[in-house]
Each structure stands twice: as C-alpha cells, then as structure tokens.
Length: 280
View (cartoon, helix red, strand yellow):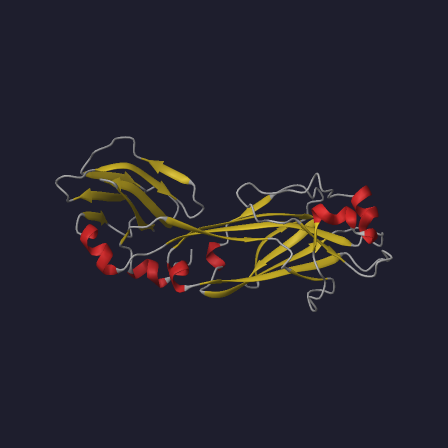
C-alpha cells in the first residue's frame, strides 16, 4: 500500500462526512481504433444504437442490445458506450479500440482518500490502465460479466488518466465495434482545519498508530462515551464492528488483519468521527 505522506504524518481526527467522486463512461470519452494513437472517434450511447444505420446489423445480431446494456447501481450518470469505426458501410477496421478520459484530484481530495472502486464491463476482453499502470484485465468472452478492482494505490494528486483497451475479437467480421460500461467510485474525507479539529481531538485518543496488535480508542470526555464503532478497509468494506455501546475505552484486536490503512468510524455524542489508522 502506498500511503500519501499526509496519512503518515497527519493520522489525527477527522470530523467529516464522506464525500464521493464518480468517473463514469459517457459520451465525453475519447475513442481510438488505431492502438490508442489518434482519439478521434465519437462514442455512441448503446441505448441509441438502433438509430445508427451503420450499426443496425450489430444491434440486431450481437451484444450488447439496449435491453442488455448494464447500468451499474449507484452510477446514475453512467452511459454504456460504443466505439464504432468508420466508414458507414461497415467494412472491417479492426478488433482493438481504446477508450480514454481524464479527471483531477485536488489536494484535499487526495489527502483524504478513503476508498476507490472500479466496476467495468467490456466486449469482450480488456486491459484497464490508470496513469499507465495496468490495474485490471480480462480475457473473458462473456461480455456481460462485471469486473471490480480497487485502484487506490495508483491515484495521484492532480490529473489522472484512465485508458481501456478493448478487443472485441470478432476477427474480420462486420462487427467492427467495442463496448464499455465503466464506473469509478472515489470516496474521500473532507478534512477540517486544525483549529476546527483541535477542540474535539482533545477529547479522543487513538493509540498506538501505526499498530500491529491492538488499537485503543479512548474518550476523555466525562459526558460523551463511544458508541457505534465500526472499522472499514479502503474498499469501504466493513471489517469490524464493536457491539457494546457507551464505553469510555474500546480495544480492537488487529493482529490478524492485513497490513493496510483502515478507517475507524464511531459516534461521540452527536458527532460522527472518522480516524485513519495503519496496521503494519
């Protein structure tokens, strides 16, 4: 796991609400049919493909059809897209298409990263790159299978580039197209200023951090106790829940956990608190 320096030197209290950023396939992506050199093709919405004369044959005889195009739950703005080659007479161009888009992570978003999860569906084998690093691939011929990856290690502050190489493997047929459905969910904490954190930070102790055996969480507030404590990994998956409530101190065994960054989440009075901890 590559921790940003902010994780290592600022593992203090975060009074935040999880923020979400989504990167989805849509008609703004760039498409290339020439090994990713000239991204000058226009992607098409799968749901509109029956209206395009030169891909009527594809829509009628091969996947995906508008009825089968996947819309991932929670990715409301996602558009399943085609990369379709010219010319309109459906002459064979090639099997390989590249899809590309870029997005930016600001300092606050990057330093507060909690999780990143990709869902991807492509026809029918693909290589998925984030900032020129291969993060997923499939040789699957069942195009409707959805694959998931966690690319948090490969995100960078500033501009990020996603490229997907899709091989439709139709070998010289009229089906000169490629299909992509894509959704990247990024969750990050909106870090408060040190002044905002300090008053509450004085009420909480989380130690040791980093740790290899136990994490102790203590409330120094004589009125408010710890309740509803949960621990999540960087995929957003729940890995631990503390069933007892209203305690001033909780000890969490972590010796069997994988070395990684984890997020403690608990209530202190009426405030939700998240705290980054590292298990090494």
